[in-house]
Length: 397
Image (cartoon, rainbow, N blue to C red):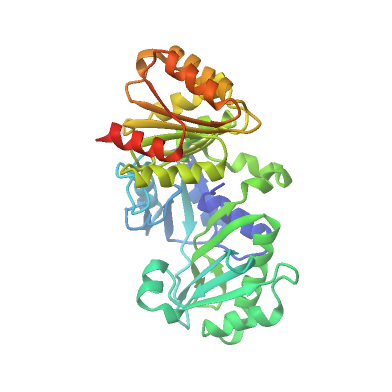
């Protein structure tokens, strides 16, 4: 589950991580109230207006602005709330901004210069350990840094059994070129950040930038936080953090129905039972000259109701030119699945305007194939994987 910047910062602050302070607003009355509260709390005279959407690159798209007065902060807020923000990580049409964060300016002048760093914590799947990745080149695209100057990217594996050890936190601060008070502040920042990562059952913490202020404080200016969905039962309070407006509506509908659905950008819809079979089916589609339009696992109970809903979800995508149903009948009988496909086809009716290839293999697969062939519906039956691939290729050409 992805969180907004302000939500991630709230979690960080609860674990003692220093953050850029701010208040959320969704309308102009809340904007005025947020500015007033922030002024009292921080005595700031500069305000940073930040669009809250689930996408990076907000500054490049005009979603982060600095205001030098209360009046300017109000005017900028009015423009950003409700705008369609286009960034390198949004769809071409952009994302509507429903919330903004009004934050303090932390780039204040002082005796020493400010410095931006990059820090993230995630699972290193090749080692099975957690990993802290960090760089002196914060505030810019970390992908570009990794591509052009990979020696500026540092990685430290953290054993989940022992957790972050003191010498590792000190090494991170040293590799970032810090000393004195800033060195000590970074050790505390990294230690608390790792505690927050573990304590919240996160799958990703990405802080870009982490800022060394001119008075040597270390704070999170931004936050990208993803929580492991499988651990949400341990955090009932996190359920309220989910923003359905930021998610694909078709994926939300599928999730509510207990279907595993991921929207993709191809032209062949997939309906399968089992994640492994789904991946193999997507490979099959690619080899046939098509491209998968979705990942859809209907699970082990592929009854008529679930099959019908799955068809309706797939057909919402206007790019779908064909649908491949690939079911392996182990626990579920293929003939029951076939009957479910026939019933769903009849219920949906003329809304199905694309060819459907059905491969049913396993328990009662021959009976299933006969049911499909005798249904007199525009459904193409297949038995073998190769046969299904040929059928997909035929309907696409």
